Image (cartoon, rainbow, N blue to C red):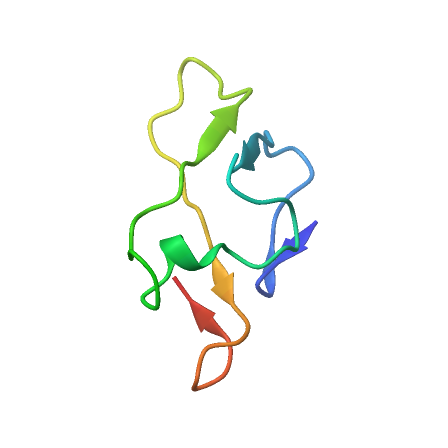
Length: 71
């Protein structure tokens, strides 16, 4: 698997991360942007092992004014 040009080993445990506010590859609703209410959208994490100490979430903004912006 490859994300943001970072190679992730096959033995890494993968979890399900999504939002109930929009579907995969859909635009984030305006309320969750600086053009709307600028509030955080809900993030749901599933299948996280009990011994997890930290997680990293990359979010790409492909239509940012300066090109792809990574949050």
